[in-house]
Image 1 (cartoon, rainbow, N blue to C red):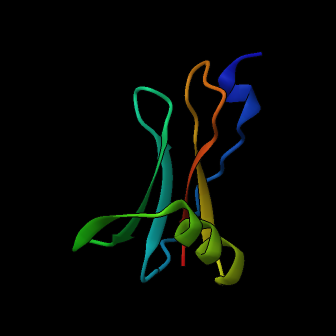
Image 2: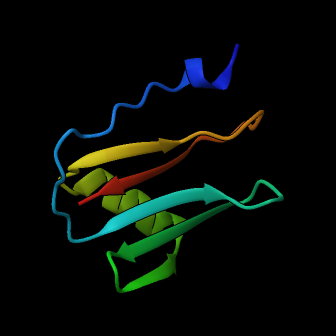
Amino acid sequence: MELSKKFRYVPSPIPFKYRMAYSATANKSGRMQYHRIKPGISRERISRSEFIEVFNTSVILGVRPIPLENAPVIQLEFYV
């Protein structure tokens, strides 16, 4: 199955304000890396446990999947 058919992502038709974004991305070896992003200011690496805690306890405004070709991992960003 083609990757574009696996992930259906519809961007927000209106811009929204968020104070922080969090991302989970895979590096070239497939190892996951987690970041906290202050829009326009900084990008800081964080632990997996911090990423999971924020994901489970925050009010999430939006989620953006980041597809990878032929990869067993799911990458994503979410906005709080």
